Length: 80
Image (cartoon, rainbow, N blue to C red):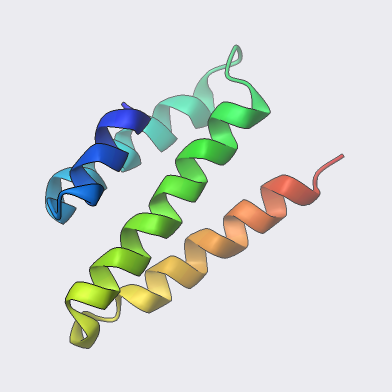
């Protein structure tokens, strides 16, 4: 799901990417078998999605969503 979301983002299909990456995040947040790398990958994908979307449509405040997900990624990475 994460890879599909990243692929959609890379091709400019931002709405589809957001759906896939959000779904992947929800699944990985609940999954006991998900690795830290899996969780970091989806968080990174969400950051990259919103950065790209902001570049394409700077008037839509996607930069604030990128900042929100970047904070979550940093929090995840700082956990022991």
